[in-house]
Length: 116
Image (tube, rainbow, N blue to C red):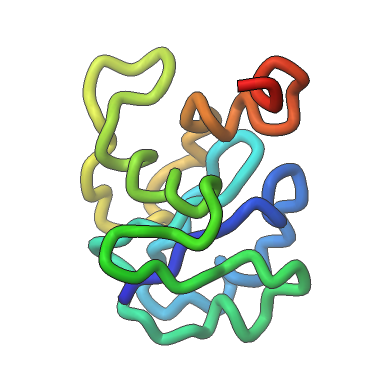
């Protein structure tokens, strides 16, 4: 089961997970880091080093918090300002930070998002 990065990472992108990931599957959005579910090998190295306990296991397509569920959406749906999904990029280090987030992450913590 792949890992995903939960709500404790929003606006707290420590980056220690990126440094230890053996398959380079952690990509940078604007407010949060995202683990590509198809590239993650479920090793848990990210979870061991994260000071915020942000990486969590996703089982059978469901995530323990709604922000972790956004990791798969980040790669599968077009992001704001893009016409097509990111898909599989083949390694985060060969790409600059993506610089945008899913709509749910972008709105996370705003009064309008909390009232829905």
